Image (cartoon, rainbow, N blue to C red; front, side):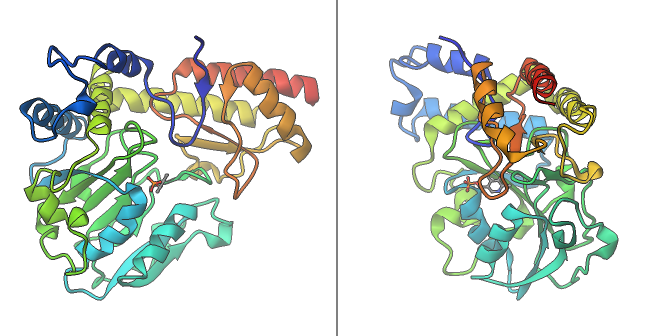
Length: 361
Ligand SMILES: *Cc1c(COP(=O)(O)O)cnc(C)c1O
């Protein structure tokens, strides 16, 4: 068996230690005689697994006590609809910041339930930079302000948190959660699909301030009604038990690595190495993103010509470096380097890039 360095944007690499532990516990979880995936979600074993995962996540993110942590299904995409249904709270409109592909999807789904005001857009920069907050036109009567801290496809990331006063800030952190410490108290709601930086697909985590829930629109499906799910410890129906368990193993792994301060240091170093390889390639590689908005997690880059992409991808694969193609909507190349991508994977990619440039420059 030889594992590759997988630069996929999601589903993405898992920490090898977590996979090993899951393998060891696969057939018989700690003397229970069964796999976690065979357990009743209401049995005491799974209830303990679920509670421990929540506590570890709360510890990692220092989630204040007045926030609920929900483990739901339907992905981040499900939340694009659930958020307006839950958070309008009698108001008519919500503010959205449009910084690219995932913002746009959140906006078009929200329009089914709310009047959406686009308060800022990255369009002028072709979505390769973030419009500064001084240019935003926030509405003090909006139900909430929604933004996408990391645009996974274009590799544009906020390295700052918007200031929205009393209007709750809502963040789609699918591709950046747990990559660095955050101050949860600045947000009304944070959500993230699991398959990038948390665990396998099938789970979406919602962290929501208590006072914002309990006023969902009557049409809200009960599985996406935050109050119903909070009261039921996210078990108003059968939750994605095995994914929840694996997410819990990832949280333990992060704690053992030193928590989010340590991860931020590693992630910054990994990203710096990769951007340096691009910037110092004598123009062979090019990062399309405005430097202050470069993502730590998703690094798109371009070659001098499109014809070189196929040989790049083929030769990288030979070297054990896979899934480096850019998103089909933008082309080019993209290396996603989430928490589970070891620094060695980035070092090997940098070496390969330097060698490829020498041979083709
Ligand atoms: C991947 C991604 C999504 C979509 O997640 P699903 O789980 O497929 O619904 C939404 N937002 C961002 C920022 C993403 O990276």
